[in-house]
Structure formats: structure tokens, C-alpha cells
Image (cartoon, rainbow, N blue to C red):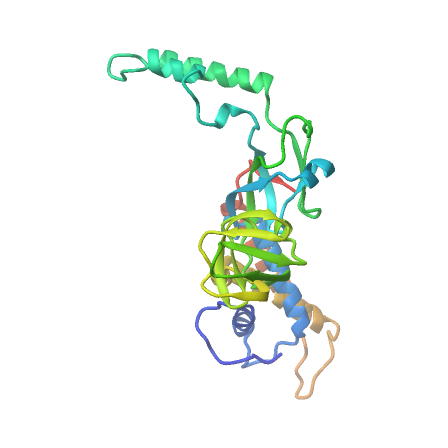
Length: 324
């Protein structure tokens, strides 16, 4: 297949990434017998593997979700499509919150640890470990179930007692770094008098996360909090008035220049090329040239195995991850 354009430096878009892979295989000097849709499929396969196994393909975040009555009624919360791994859900008790003067931890620090130079901290640390053990014994940690293909985080708790409308759930999780610019559902309106975005037909709680940057019309703005599926509070007041503007979310274009992703995608395209040519194995072309698709497949398979092994041995994510 032909290249879209000439050399444009390091890949920063899907098209320039595609051109890079084809040039690495020999284009435009030789013809790469792969359809454009096949190339797109192999790039998607490479991205999926990259997100699953390479630490540079994901980002560790703490997702904050504001509880609504709808969450309590259905007994689960949305996890946006970008979230692919969940490691833990923070406890709902006050063990992680700021303490007051009547708290046991406050009194320990006030009376037993007022001077670090003359008092041993060993007994204090032992006591704090004992308190944490008691919290774990009597309160425990929230049990959860997550599968990224459902985009739902199920919390196995007493929803009528443990959480109230307006409270927050903090989830430690990993999100994939999407290099493509994606379109979001619905339209949005905003003005220069308030730091809010009002959506029409939007599903903000299912598609974006706090601190994400979204583009409304032509203005990029950062999310402070997601108040409902159709309402967002922004960190700054918008600089323009927009009515029913299109919604998009810019990707992390630097992902396209990752060396493992480039090697892996090129090997997958090469394997596809060999697979296409293998249908004509043994057929002699004009000039006595014989197509050797199986040999190209064999070389590509060795390259794929090597990249996958390197990625899983040297760049794999921590074992703590609960993969949905």
C-alpha cells in the first residue's frame, strides 16, 4: 500500500505512525501487500497489547466518584472506558481522614510523642500498627468486583448504610493512555460567567475522569469534578461562550513514538504481509520471481515473540494489579 506523505519526523498521529511502520518494512522502495484496513487492525492489536503489558501504556490514578441516588439504587458505579485495572477502593470510615483532638491517634501524639528527641517512637509505631489491625478487623476494606468490558465497578457493601448521596468513593486504578483524539457523546454549552459545563445527551460519568482535558468546540478546558452525567465543574472559567459545541478529548500523541510499540506494530504488519502472500506460495511471477510469504511470516513471528517477551519481562506492570 502507498504512503500518505513524505517523511514527517517522529510519529505523532496514527497516520504518521502507520507510515513509519510501512517505511520500516521497505515502503516505498518495495510494495507492501497489505490493505489499509488490515494495517489499522494490526495497529489496534499492538495498542491493546501495549496497554495490557507495558508500564508506559498506562497511568496510575486515584479516581474520585461522587455518589448519586442512581448509584445507590443500582449498587455499582461507572468506570470509564479508559480504566482497565483496579487495585483497591479506599475504606469508607474515618481511618484515613484528618483527626480531631478527641481521636486516639491525636492523644497519642500529644502525650506520648510530643518530643522526638527524648521519646522513643517504637512504642508509638507498635500502637499505631495495633490500631490499623483493629480497623482492618472491625471495618475491613471494601470488597469490589471489576471487569473492564462492563465499565462497571461493583462494591459489595451495604449501600443503604455505608454510603450517602454526595459522598465520594476513591478508587486506586490504572487508565490506558489513548494516543488518538476521540469524540465524546453529546454536545456541551459553557459561558464566561461560570466554571461549569452543561451537556446535552452527554454521559460524562462514563467517558471522562477528573483532571482530564476536554475540548468544547475549539477551547480546551480541564475538569475539576464530574457532578452528573450532564454537568461538569471546570478548574478555570471558560474564555469563550459556546452553545451546543462538539466534544472531543485529545490523546497522548507521544505514545506513538514509543520504541516498543513501533517495533511490535511493525512486526504484526509484517506477519499480515506474509500471511497475505502465503496464499500465492510457489506461484512464479514474471521474471522468475517467486513469492515467499511463509518465510516472511516466520521472520515476523520471531520478531513478535521477542518483543512480547521483552515487554512482559522488563516492562510488565506490578503484580498488585487486579485486571478486569
